Length: 158
Image (cartoon, rainbow, N blue to C red; front, top):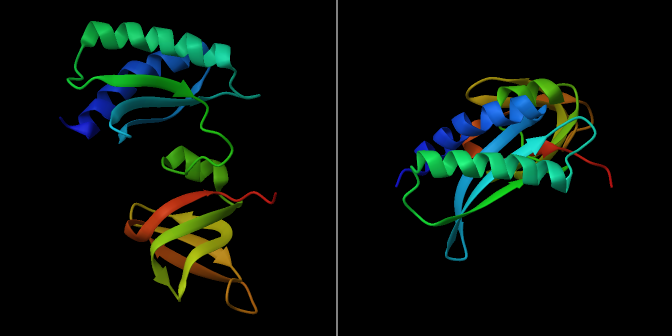
């Protein structure tokens, strides 16, 4: 079993379905939770995703998965909205959020902090840079190694 191959092949099947329906394909994941495997596709669209949208995409993908039959393990298929707190994973996520406030959770502390918040100012394949005043009296750029980032997502002021 190669989780990455399952995710990649599913994304290839799901992309034409989402594009034809006017949806954005946000992410695909194949994860084990509580003894069961889940194949999840996350979709979005302007104005939000409804249950009917998820059902429509799920039925189309299910037909393709049955035809291709490349996943050996039994799994549960789920199609859903990524929600407001969706993680930034792909280039388009970073482009969409440049100049916006994001929060970062680290695996290992940096400057004695594991949780950071600031304005997304730059990124590349290896680093993410925020403009932040966390821990200082003035704003400054702080750069994080992507390997140390457990989660990065848009920050919301609830």
